[in-house]
Length: 251
Ligand code: PEP
Image (cartoon, rainbow, N blue to C red; front, top):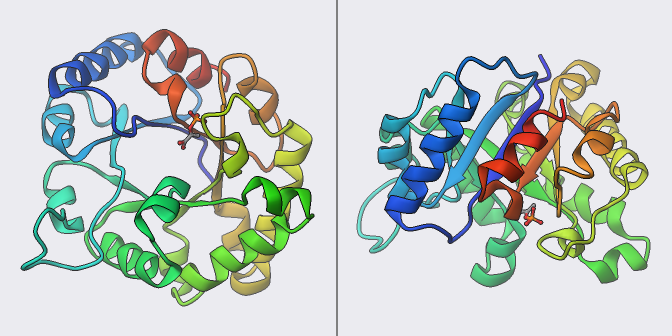
């Protein structure tokens, strides 16, 4: 079934102590509250195990922000999907535009990461989205289609059904510019239709598609009210509980 999810992406922020304090504060804020979405926090690798132990992981899922494209071995500095899963994390953010742009992550690499994540029981939160020039040239539909097709369409239906997608227009990430809810709805519906063309209506209908890009307390309600927007991937506003909670409560 399609889930509503609000997921934070801390990126490269917070020391271990600061991250633990933030996770515990969010855990306390959610205690005794019933919310209408699943809540996830994406943290740097160093936080995963401590955060997973410090919070109620039935209420807050923990996500890594990346994993290696290799299973194990002599890959100094890398962290495997199996290692991520051993911390208690249940999700992994893959294909974020910052990793594509700064670390050269290609669709080929991302396919390997997705497969390893799935083999280790992690739910990939797979990011797609166009840059400003592509949007201005009216190419955003074909860009996201190509990102999905090249990295994900080799998956079986059973595996594809385990993914969460996050549409994140690169021009909206960390810029304060947000896609309008009309723009988000239009492309989310398009993405769902594209998935239906390959995997059928049922899998497409059940696929959670998050919006990411300067989502905040002021715009979350409008974005989440649209039928094809199933929640958000939240960067900056996930770094403080008083900014993140209103987004969770927008559902
Ligand atoms: C992100 O990096 O996934 C993101 C959506 O960031 P921000 O909310 O800060 O735009």
